[in-house]
Image 1 (cartoon, rainbow, N blue to C red):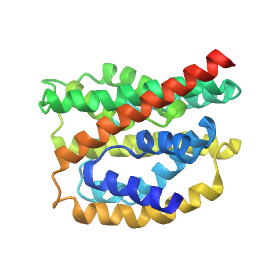
Image 2 (image 1 turned 90 degrees about the vertical axis):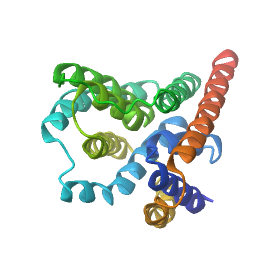
Image 3 (image 1 turned 30 degrees about the horizontal axis):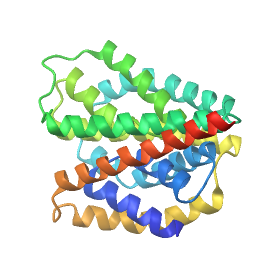
Length: 251
């Protein structure tokens, strides 16, 4: 089951660019019944593994803006550490963690849909790096706490706060997501807050799925697939919110 899930998630990443963290954690919680903290840790480590194959491509193409990346990491690194520490502190509050993770997933997926509906493709007219660092702090916190946020929010921040071209936005955001996932995943790994057996099976399917997604990316309508996955994520996040609320009421 985990191999199939890893394949499908990585396939979706390759086809649409939708971040692995925002998909993986809700699926692990709702369908594989992992505790929220273990699901977030497993999702972050899995996201690092999947993105490892994509990052060198953008570096080779010189589609990473290292100055913007530096400002992103200036805010994102403390943010992801803070989010990871907060998740550890709330580990016993499973209902609250479920509700917050679900809320972040809903917001992240909804922002993707909003960006598509408004056709937010125009970059900002000047570079606002200070605001970029502040936005990255919030994004990093969300990544550390829920494994979600780097893809949708990072892309929006780069488009609105820099003058970078679209390929550089994608490459820079992917590199940022890789680094914060690496830090957050490393934190969860050191704390033992992940499921090693599930992770290995996810990666076994994810490698094949990532290659297949990259190969099929030019065949399927990417915009339609991204919208469909985002709608599905809104539903998944809503289910997490509901389960978390019920757990808090009865807890």
